[in-house]
Image (cartoon, rainbow, N blue to C red; front, side, top):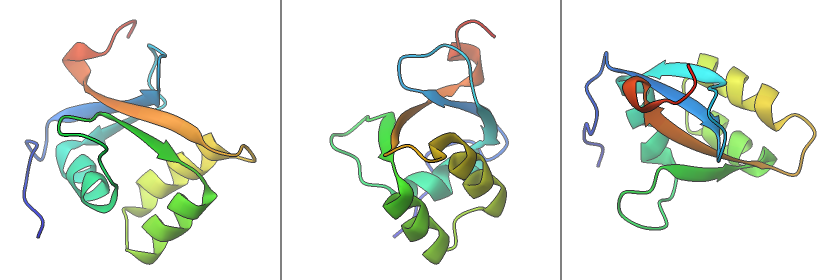
Length: 94
């Protein structure tokens, strides 16, 4: 069952784990929807591994189209990437 963890209009950033610059800015509602579909290793996790299989799964589950486009560009032809989310005010270097 889905529940809202984030303020729907609050801006969040997605970035490659360990980097300070964002590759995407998303709303809390988009982040909620994404995290509902991903597995957290532990409570409070902010990082996730995304590969082609994950992208295919997200697409089949009806993930946000614009967010999928951004993730597809980031994964590219790699074997996968680690991403993390931050609230915009926590984002360093921006």
